[in-house]
Length: 289
Ligand code: SAH
Image (cartoon, rainbow, N blue to C red; front, side, top):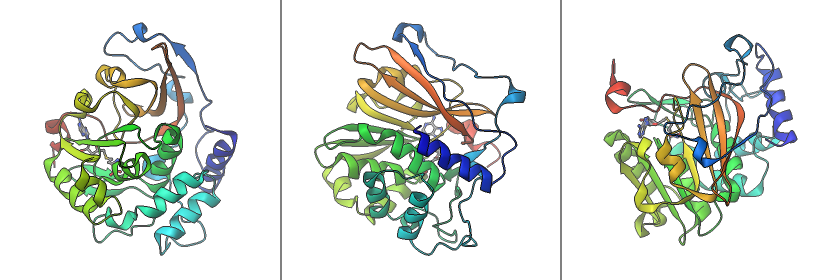
């Protein structure tokens, strides 16, 4: 994370008092061969010293507005003002893809909070979408390939498709068929409709832990659900020079940024602490639903 992003997150934390400070950035070069499947993510510190910035679930950005941001543009401006959106590219795509088309009716679409979408799943909070787009933007250039695992509402898949354009490829994988059907309807109403029609954007019902080899290798892989460990298939489907952003952990989760170097070796660092729904089997997810 850049220092401006770190300070933005610190500002968030001050406004939404955390119980401890944000995590330090870690970077550890590892060779691909050290990822004997499955790769267990390193724990940075003891659970007691782990920061409690449960970003995905608890952080809301509605400072001074009473949560009543009235437009998608207003939301993007707020995220920009607080330093979560730092680039024109991310601001532009988040303005183009209106979040209101993806948030289920009855929920305020522009509040910076995750919202339930049924099936024990949520649409991620806007600041998490923005954070992931910022982390992946260099790997979402026109003509590149992106995989969105746990695509849920389809919001980020649509953003990826807009960024990689008609010459690129954006694939969403989601294991709840009803969510896939709903996400396709959402995308059809959005600015990404034509890309869906032309086939550079597609969403598939599948177990995302195995990726989507048909369109691999990918310049960008985003995982929208927390994996107990990084799935080997996803590492294998990452292009040299590619980047994966994935929440890793069970109760305590880190948003990990994995860069595959041109020689195939891998760098892993932890961006921040997060709280996502688990990347799991369909049966486990739908238990008690
Ligand atoms: N990023 C999406 C959804 C986040 S919720 C959005 O913002 O709309 C995480 C999603 O991951 C859920 O929709 C859940 O059904 C899905 N998921 C969990 N485990 C999965 C798996 N093994 N394969 C595919 N999708 C999975």
